[in-house]
Image (cartoon, rainbow over all chains, first blue to last red; front, side, top):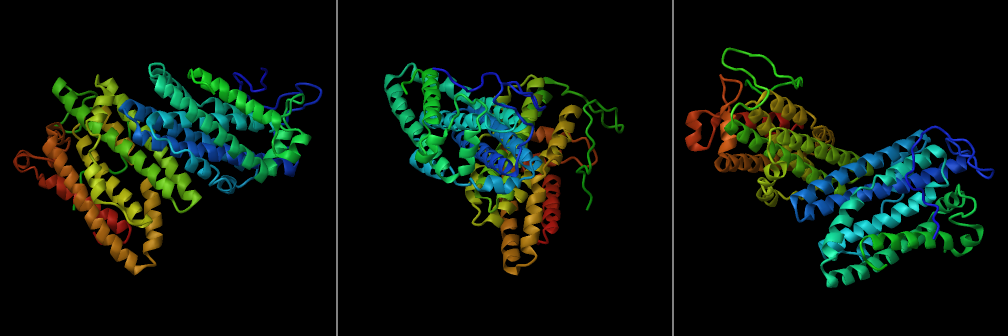
Length: 256
Length: 256
């Protein structure tokens, strides 16, 4: 399985030269329309960090140990810093950061209502799977941004150290408990289904995001191609997100 | 009314020389017993920042506007950073930061149960008054610490920018609404009464805190003197906390 997700992205705010004949990376969006679409994606990234803050804070309040509470509150604080970096970029691009953020204010409300965790482990897995799909979507979409925005989004998404806590704890718990493992595998399938549903609704409601996805830097394998646009079921994007989810579940020894 | 609370404290981590004939500031606690008492106070300061994080995060989730949510989450993130600075100092002093924090895990549970805000304004005032009394208590107690710990605690408490938000909003709302003003004045009286109750319980339960208070650097007006110790009603401390509360309410145009 090949993937066009970058591993170990190096961050450089200066524009890079042409990477191949089909693509020239730009330090800023080229047209006002590109700029609007870029801001639309950045608004989503900022909102997801904002939601991550609220979730991590809620998780911290329920954490079984003081050590976990300390770790989760640190992750929550880091999400605020990441969100504010994205908002600053929106300002740099001449956008209104509050408006860009606000348009996604209820983007995960339905998802949250449908996926109420019933235990600490389900809560951890929800964070891991839910953030995972959202982060992967933003990573793929970031490939269609100007170089500065792209590098910033990828750097932010790489700093998702909260996943490590989830992995360590779920791994330790799951390996000794077959019933828990089976239950969490089922929970993971429900979570990824609902997560992909969120992505699908976003593509229907946000043509700007679709345009960013079609501008992917990786010209051979665009995340969304013209044929996909009519169905709102971009095959490449969804198979990519599903593959990453499978990989993620395997890290926990869980069947996706 | 005189006060021994410092205004515009300048922070300097290096030990200062004798400030008067009665007092020599030390860069570290002198005896193992002093060290334990210092860690006991630092644990409380860390816990109060931890609680501040949880409250600010909860306030953010209920904030009426996106701008307020952004500000409150930033304050919450700052509380995590402040807490971690205090925990690092506990480690420097050879203490166990998690244990120091954990001993105060439920210190405000009763207070919270008794003071459930019924509106956004009551919530803001609760943060302002509740943090205010807690911060003043820690400021007064910090005078009994070694110079490095004292400077750090005072610096941390001076960074309480969330109070400004509360003041700006409450002031704007209250000035145009006499009924709200009267209601909030009543709420403020209830809050300060419950806050002073928390301080009183702490003094009964934590002899280490009382010892720190009696070591106040300001020898002429110790926050707690020997006679107070029998009654657990240190007059000087409580009159100081009350005076600061009155000043705080006046800033809002509310009667204390």
